Image 1 (cartoon, one colour):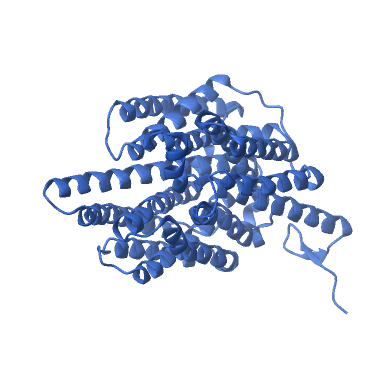
Image 2 (cartoon, one colour; image 1 turned 120 degrees about the vertical axis):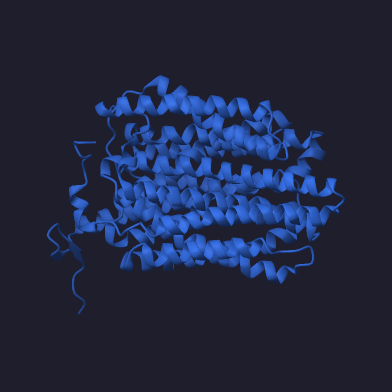
Length: 499
């Protein structure tokens, strides 16, 4: 006969799990799994529009710069809303936030599918982004709150699948759809998924947190929108303009940096009374700060490669949108399949046996990408991309887990908001730096008489060398990330008084 299920208690001993314990565990698992599936759907939608740009330009009769606003406006909305999520998760119940986020996403998807013109489609993307921006921090905070430390790595492995694999396979799915149907089916396919998530959430989502009646500081909201919105807009505009830096880049960046400085000063003052919109005491924890910096480096590499590799495959190797999407699919699948295994390894051995080899793999893969030529066959690119994605999986999961586990429970919502915000900014930085480098070097080469494909490859070489140098910093940082002090978990429910 099997022995009763056992549950750890504070002193490390075990006792037989009560029916109430089992009921809570089932409830917690249901809540987290609902959030995982829903977040996968909303993030999958984030990257599907890039490959649809040529089709939209033809159907709406618009320029490439106008069509890019469908992606830029989405990212801009994310950058504005995500910093607010820490406050929202403290102020409202889990169920209410989930239903609000999925309702926004469903409404935006429906409007997009039926949009009669470009302007309506743009508004629909903004509505979608409002729901997406809430879901990722909500998932991370809820998982950290409900998942016991012993299995947190496995859960974070599942989250890695969502936040890293979904955007990676988005272009592949979009390419498959657009090869047979119109751009509207990008949203018609999402619509039943969003509706199912909304209905299941309405039926099964439970409240797992107790909201606190915290007043909102309106000035902080305005500063946050100007700061993160300005920075992401300015950096995104570099990519849209082919790497040129003019007033459209400098002005929003200047406004964003100035607003960020004022925002930080205000949060430092407000957090003394626990009134901060985004509590920056998370960065008083050294391991959290180091992990977030390393995650930012990974985000730069991930989103930069998502931009450069399709350009190389389509403009240099002559692949179609569908072919290039399919070539990138195995890398996304490798990341997804390896993440749960990596989570189990993290639970047993901690971050260093994963993060250090992972960052080394990332650096080697990026360095290998800098050696590609005009004649490189697709079967050379494929294993390099798979290696890059496995390296990213080996770092994302342990760094997420370690960063959040080092925080007091009280700061989980602010920590997840900070991680998500900095990933958006880092992704925008990576895209801007790599696209600018590609454009500048390619233009100089063509001006010197180099044929366009060779000039494009020269630009990619320089961009990937820069990425490899940045990745080396990730190796150094990963070596300082230590295993969370799980034995102190019960003592981290409050923010240290001296902070």
